[in-house]
Image (cartoon, rainbow over the protein chains, first blue to last red):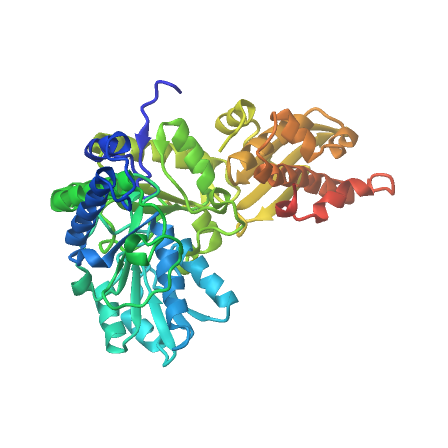
Length: 395
Length: 144
C-alpha cells in the first residue's frame, strides 16, 4: 500500500496551504511578531500587515475595509453573525429563517437560540438542493430579524440564488447573512450586488491556513460581540490578532480571486468529465445536487445498495481521499442532513460519496478513480443483501 | 478510522461472502435506515454448522465482523455457535474502535437470528438455551 499514489480529493473538507501563502506568512512568525496593539515599531509593523490584509480581503469582496473583521474561522464567523444579530435585535423580534441544508455551525447556532426562546424556521429545499426565494418570502413575518442562507453547499455543491433572496430581505428590511465558506475563492463575491449584510469566509478552504476566517458586516449593521475583551477589530472582536493567519488568509483569497476564471474552467471540465465517466460506468448511481448550478469542484454520488464508509475505506486502500454522507462517517445514527433534505431515502443517503477537486487534481487521476470506483462498487454490491444481481436490469 | 490489520484484512478479503442455496437457516438483522443490514445463511448437518455465508450492507466494521463471525462458527456444533459473543468477534479482530462496537453486536445477532430460526423450526429451544437469544432484543446501535 505504501507505493500507491495518494490522490487528495477532499478539498471541501480542507486544502493544503499553498506555497505563496506560506511564503507570505513565514516571515511574520519570526520578524513581524509584534502585537498589533502595541505602541512601538514592532507592533505598528504588525498592525500595518493586518490593515493591508483587511484592505485586500475587502477588495476581493467589493466591500469597505471597515466592514471586514477577522475571526478564528468560518464557525466563529457564523456563530457571531447569527447570535450577534439575534442579541442585538432581540427586542425587535425573535424569528429567524434559515435552510435545512446549512452547515452545522449555522444550524446549531440557531438551535442554541431556539433554546433561548427564539423561533427558527428552516425552509425546505428542492430535489437539487435549491432554496426558493419565494419560500423565504413566504416564511417572513413581522418579527423576523434575520435570514441566513448559505451561498454554496459543502456537500452537494448547489449554489443558492443569494442575490434574489437578498433582494427580498432588503425589501422587508430584514438582515441577511450568508455562509460563504465554500463559495469564497470559488465564486465571485460582490457583497453589494448580492444584497447581503453579513458574510462568512474561512481560510482553509482556499489554500490558506486553518484557524482563521473573516466576517463581512455591512456598515450600520448592529451585531452584539461574540468575544469581549480588548479593543481589537474596532472593539467588535476581542483577542490579539492572528497576524500570520490573517496575512495568509488575505494572500490566499487574493490569489484565488485572480485565478478564478481559469481555475473554474479547469475544475468544471474535470468535474463534468468525472460525473460523465462514473454515470456511464456504474449503474444505479445518481448525482446529488444541481447538475449545473453547483460548485466547479464538487461531485457527489449515491451508489445504491452499498454503504459510504466501506466505499471510503476501499478508496483509501487504492490511494484516494474522499468523504461520504453516511451515518458511519458522521458518527451519528443519521446520514447527512443535507442528503435527507433533498429527499434521498436513508439507505441511498448512506451510500453517498463526495469527491471535491482542487489545484492538484489531474485528469488522469480522475480517469483512474472512475475505473477503480467501478471495481469497488461491484465488489461491495456483490456482498450486499440489497443487491440481487439476477434481478437487476442494469437500468 | 483506526482499524486493526485484522479488520482491514477481513474487510479487503472477506471470508464467506454469499448466500447458501437451500439454507437450513437464515437470519437478517439491522435495517437500511440505520445503514447496517446483515444476512447470515447456514448449512447444518448432524448438529454441526457445515457452512456459513453472509451478505452485508454496511461499513468496514460491519463487513469485517460478518466475515469473522461466520469464520468462527464454521465447523462448530450448534451448542458452540450459541455461545458466540460480539466481544469474542471483536477480540478475534484485535479490537474495534468504540463507536464501531455495535457492528460486532449486529454480527452476533445475525448469527443468532439464523440459529433461532433453526431452533424454532426443529423444536430445539429449551429453558436452558433460550437465554442465548436474549441479545436479539437489544438495539445494536446502543451497544458499547
